Image 1: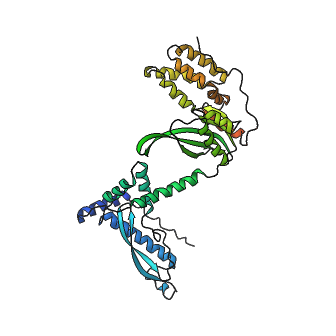
Image 2: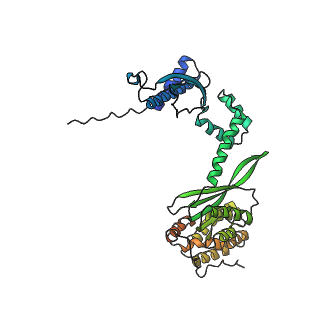
Image 3: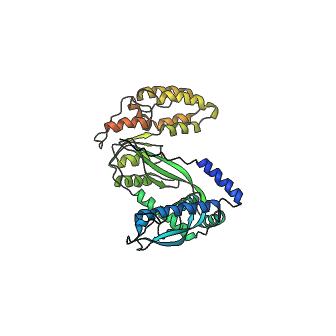
Length: 376
């Protein structure tokens, strides 16, 4: 008994293909892109070949195959259609079925642009270009006319999808919730820097999930944060074990109001970064080394001892640094209760294994964890 082994398809050498196209363009003295360009013709060939393959699958036989005779349905010529692609407008011939039942998927009925064009429009819009500037870009680069209304419809479609994503149901429990801000440029009459707040939840399976995005103006307080967290809770989040944030005004109180048993943990990276803002650059390395024993201490009490030593050393020169750590102490020490890690995010992983259901009691703080007093 013999076994037939299917031949392994030969892989296409994309580098060689690109070189062949460049050589051909030079020999034939044609452009690579634009109307009449070599890539335009290649795109036309690829699209029409794919459409012919779709028609063959729809009818059940290849073009000119005798098996299709008297089959009740057959090819009925083509119709000309121009679609906008990444290399410019391309005129293609779309095959038709005699009974009108052919529904192509590569280039759908009434589709006038390929999906890649939408991505280009969104990318240009995200960079701050107006609808008029995007339309001018397509006319200049691709030789294609795209109306402002078409560009607006593309962006509006994304807004609808974004709104549906922002309102989607969430998991019942997130062991860890990170809240932070990114600064982006926003065009609102003029281009300005605006904070966009992001909430990232760590699921019980250890996966990160972006829960939502909220635009702000930099003056957000407790009322704003309470509305954000209430929205998250109304989408199904019953419990958060640890909330990691960077001392944003009103946020810790909003967290405990929304989920009373949640532990608020100050972000260590932000705390260290803010420390350096109050210190001279020449002292950064030394301060960084002396801070390390504090956040790697085995217990909150040991961290308090190390902080006292740090304050004795730097309190006179940088009192603002000492005050910064004292004010953040209660939100800084929670992760020190977990002996498996020295980072808030990793220590919460242990929280995840022990609190996979809504919390019923808040952990008590060990003795000796009150913030050290400023040295005199």
